[in-house]
Amino acid sequence: MKRLEQETKQANEQLTAVVKSWKAAKQTLYDRMRDMLQACTKMEETAPIIMGFMKEIVPRSQGLYFYLSIPAPT
Image 1: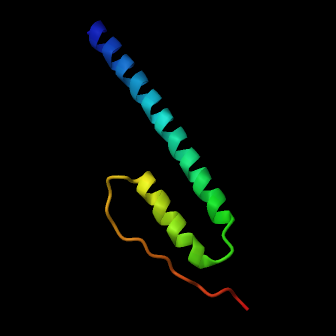
Image 2: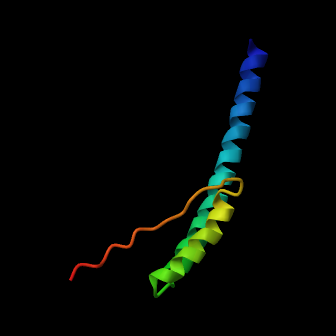
Image 3: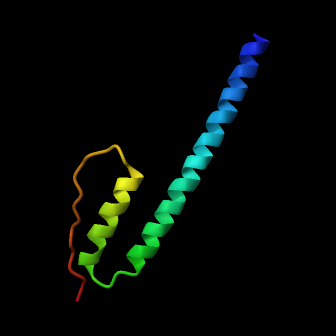
């Protein structure tokens, strides 16, 4: 029983380290994407940036990307 508790503790610690590393890597990616999007002056410039980063964010995923253009209030 003691051995199983120790193995479970070690597995949890390893998993926690992996998740922290993954979160840090993704946050860096999100920060880079945010910086590039903030530099855009036109909405048309955003789609290629987002699509490029989505390939890095979810590399083994296929899907559909769309954005909704809502006119600014006048």
